[in-house]
Amino acid sequence: MKILVTNDDGIQAEWLWALVRELKSVGQVTVAAPDGERSAIGTAVTLFQPLHASEVCAPEDGVKAYAIDGSPSDCVILALGKLITDNIDMVVSGVNCGHNLGEDVYISGTVGAAMQGYFRGLPAVAASAPRNNTVALKVAARAVAALVKRMEANKLGRIFLNVNAPDLPMEKVKGVKITRLALSSHINTVTEDNSKQHQQYRLVRERVEESASEGTDIQAILQGNISITPLYTSLLDKPPLRLLKKVGAEVAAEILK
Ligand code: MN
Image (cartoon, rainbow, N blue to C red):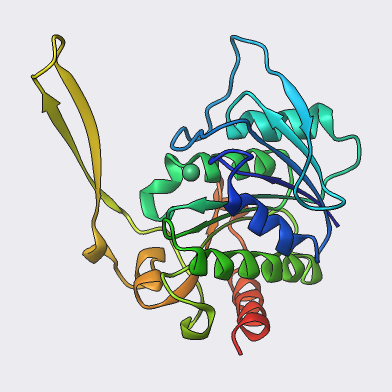
């Protein structure tokens, strides 16, 4: 299996390479990622200026890696459309440093990049773990590798999955839940700063932990589970829930002992 890996935290991010290390056991990995941090820009694409890609030395053997001076979505479009001549079987984005739950998925560059793969007819996975928690990062990376394997084995085909790991080490993770997006995940506020010559504003997002209703991604995470949320753009593409639950159970059996 040939896997394209990207992220929105930039090609230098340790979290990207932790995922690559796990995915190397599942397939042949190529990385195409932004040359710096490009978080929270959703599916933004660069249309009015040229893009540049340079092949960089990967810290993992046998992995080709390109750094691109564009958005996460640019990376996927450029890699699939030009840089990679082999057929790619799956796009995986992450692991993002910070959860992408509920409405976050419409803002997240991590999810946006995976969506570009999905739009191009491929299975796609976005993965996130709680900020600065390298123990949870390992859970996310292992879960994604197991999931990618199971997606192929069960012939899930074109599907788009958003994965989040809880704030726990693997031995404390309760299970793997197939979830839906929570309606809201943040309170958005604007702060003002009048101390400078020009008045400044800042958008501040505060997480609403208690907004979790039954069956949502936020609830699954709060209860100590790995959350897998199917995302789709048309009701006709609504994924087969029973098959997804089987895949989730297989992932749990592989990584939670
Ligand atoms: Mn990010």
